[in-house]
Every structure is written in structure tokens, then in C-alpha cells.
Length: 335
Image (cartoon, rainbow, N blue to C red; front, side, top):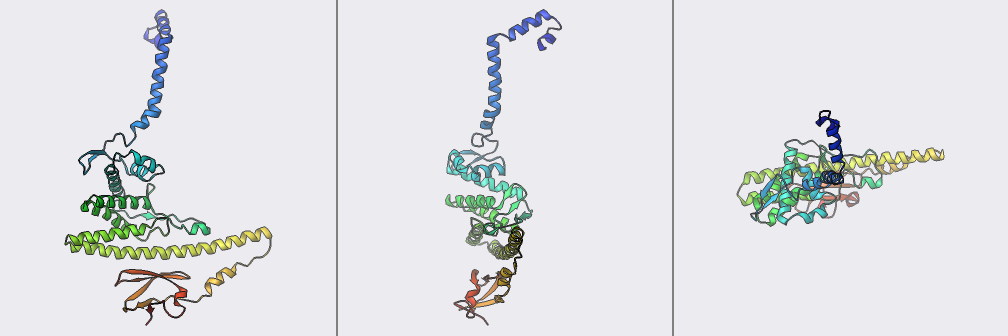
């Protein structure tokens, strides 16, 4: 059809063009070009998009060499912490290259968060015993960020710059984590595989030491205050988590008994497990005092355990109801 239109209706010329295109050599060339286009589309395109090969974002490392950077927070997380992170690790040209990726990803995450503090915790609708042990593992921001990812990126970047002897950059990434922890508020992951709270505690300690070394008492005091707020938020999250787990367990007990009742068609009384919790009658005291007369305040409590905090020594301690069997835990007393 193309040959006919190009020949302006001259069928004799059109036949010559058609015969030329039907030539074996021309067909081979045509098939080769199509294969090349498909190969580029499905293979070369992936190579072109390989962030370790080329990038529009470049930076000069502390060693004076130029390195490419991730084009987005999502790309950074994928290649640094994704399922294939161990495989991708071999593609970084050096530890400095990976550190620059960590740093850029943390900065991109900070821009994504901005000043918004709308972190949320996914709460499963129904939990069994195994699920409750991993209750509220993570907090998320929007649909693209998880607290576990962001906190790990920040702490790795901060520690990396610390090892290279750049205290200023190390403090910068510690501050990203500490400030994000304050924005997270009481929406803390209650339980998880990694102690994310320890990373935040490390960040506060390093920042306080950093500003004290530079005689900046104002910033040091600011992070002291933020650390106290962080401890308070963490305590509230623990109390809320314990309450929700306890409530969910009660719901599950009822559901289990109801299922058995339907299957066997016999009446089953679920009150006994509930009575066991309600008949304890024990309440943890609001204050207990150590041997130096420092007050320890009750911050949260469950049916069998409680968390106390001493503001003077900035220490935390967990006790069980059995510790109060003879009045107070060993080394403490009441007034």
C-alpha cells in the first residue's frame, strides 16, 4: 500500500518496489532491525535505567571522585534495602559510593516528609497469638515510606560519616532521624525485629555530645528536651499497644469459643479466662523510690507488668506484679 501511494497509482512502479522489499537480503535486514528494536525495548532499556550505570544526579565524594546518585527516594530504598540489596551491593564502586547513596536517600526522604507528621501504624483487624507478638511492627508515611526503612537509612548514613571523621555530616543525619522521631510522636512501632528506638536514642546522645563539644548549650538543651519527649511518646505507644493487644486477645477468645460452640452445638462459657485477669485486684503504685531517694514514676502498666521512669537519672525499668509481692521491688521502697 505504501509503495502504491508513493508511486501515485503507477502499478508498474509499485510492483517493482514490492519485489524489492520481498528480496531475501532486504527481508533479513528488516527482521534484524525489528529484533534490534525489540531487544533495545526490553533489554537495553533496563540497562539504560540501571542507576549504577548512569544518572542525571552526580556528586563529588570525599575522595574527590564523581559518583552517581539515586534519582528518587524509592530508587534509593530499592537498591539499598530492597529484597535484592545484597546483590546490588556488589555494583557500588566503593564504600564511599554507597555512603553517598545512603545520604542522598535520607535527604530525599526528609524532603518527602517535609513538616508533615501524619505517620500511621497499621493495626490488624484480627490477631492470633503469633500476630500479637509482632503487633504494629512498622509505621508508614503515605504509601511510599516506612519508618523502618527511613530510620535505617539515616542511622547508616550518620555512622558512615562518623567513621570517615566528618562530624558535621554525621550530626546532620543523626538530626534527620531524631527530628523525624519527634514528628512520629506516639505513632511508634510497638514491637518489631529491630530496636528502632535504640537508633533514635543513639541519635539524641550523639547530637547532645556534638553540640556540647561546640559549646552550643542552646541546641544541646533543645535535643535534651526532645529526648524527654521521645521517651514520653515511646511510653504512650507501649501503653496503647498493650491495651490493644489485651483487647484483641479478649476478642479472639470469644471468637474461638463461639466457633467451638457452633461446631459442637454445645454451650461453652467463655467467662473463665476473663475472670482470671479481673480477679487480680493489684494496682501498681504511681511512685517508688530507690536507695538514693530518687522518685520513679509509673509510665505505663498492663495486667502483670509496668514501666517506671526516673527523670533525675534518666533511666527506665520494667517490673512485674510479683516484684511487689512483699511491698516493693528489691532496692526500692514506697513512702
